[in-house]
Amino acid sequence: MFTARNKGRLAIGAAAVGVALALSGCASGDPLGTETGTGSTGASKTITIGSQAYYSNEIIAEIYAQALEDAGFTVDRQFNIGQRDAYLPSLENGDIDLFPEYTGNLLQFYDEKTTATTSDDVYAALAKALPDGLTVLDQASATDQDSYNVTAEFAKANKLQSLADLKNVTTPLTLGGAAELEKRPYGPAGLLSVYGATVGFSATGDTTVEDLLAGTVNIANVYSADPRIQTKKLVTLEDPDGLFLASNVVPLVNADIADSIADVINAVQAKLTPEALVAMNVESTVDQSSSSDIATKWLTENGLLKK
Image 1 (cartoon, rainbow, N blue to C red):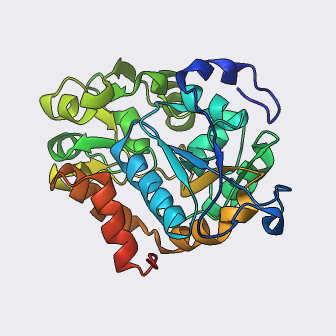
Image 2 (cartoon, helix red, strand yellow):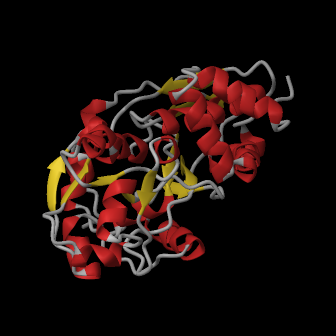
């Protein structure tokens, strides 16, 4: 896949995000001036924050945005961009400054052959694998990683507890998920090489859980913080041999501004727990609250808004 310096494939989708980064005076001071090591004098740079086209990722991006605005930064929101092929080029060329990411999946995007699996090892490997100009701030304890799920009925009928049990299922297996999952290291090829399970694939996209419940597919790739795992009583199959890398929430940031925003963003990361992320996802999907309202509420409850 990628090496740390190979940017060829990242050229794909570069036109998907065209962002003008404006320089403006900051009424509350000079958070990006010479005192913060940017080399500018008396001016501050607008922080452009992106997000995936995924409600949970947008919530985290909005939390970052509100925390930075509260600290006196000017923020430009560029949300709902899409997948990594679309937004990583804009991070590499500086059009986007900050993006909520997930350690394991991002590491595998750059280094398909990585052997890191634990949270700390993945985080360390990711820092080394990133292209020049990008870095990461602190990872949160919150995770939102790929997981393979079946219905409770299917799990009971086939005595499924872990991915290792799939090789014993006699019913033809079809895995549902986003189209790119078919070629990911943890997709069908990974299930075969790690667990000896042969599965077909169906690109179910946004209807993956619905297709699982309808029986169109019998295994579904669902992010671990998705509240439907609980509300729909899905069974997440254990991963004893580490098919999936740990994927903690991590801010991917332009290295030129990392020091300037680190205190603000790392304070957010320290409070962002797995339980908090699931709860916010419930507010979005069940209560239909806006990302802005969810972010404001969470930041207030955690004492992270000063104004």
